[in-house]
Image (cartoon, rainbow, N blue to C red; front, side, top):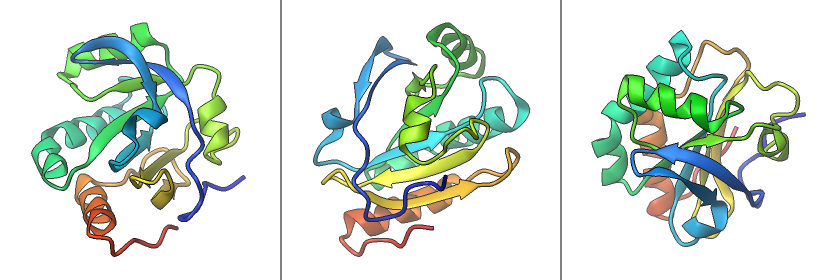
Length: 160
């Protein structure tokens, strides 16, 4: 199974999540008309995931400047997400895909430790994606910001 490519309609979902605003349900449909970054990561409070999500947190002003909203998704539950966010000062939503259904819908199959980033455009299509075949490499915030910038400028971006 391969990650969904650019041009594919983003599979709808509703997942519980934790953010600085507390616990609530996050639905892809709520982001209609706006670009959304979905960052799939292997696990809360692991060394590489911590670096990845903390780098996105530090880059929040740059991501906000291009209109990017980032939702991070892993298979841990809300309690794990809350501890992780509190420990590292994360404010972005951390979504709980406990059964892995959203991972599978986005083509991540049984490889739940795979990292992948998808930029979903305002029309609900995947405009850009990048996945790592290893759990130690992640997409930097600068690449995400550039992909979102191209999407919002209407130039589009080729997915991988």
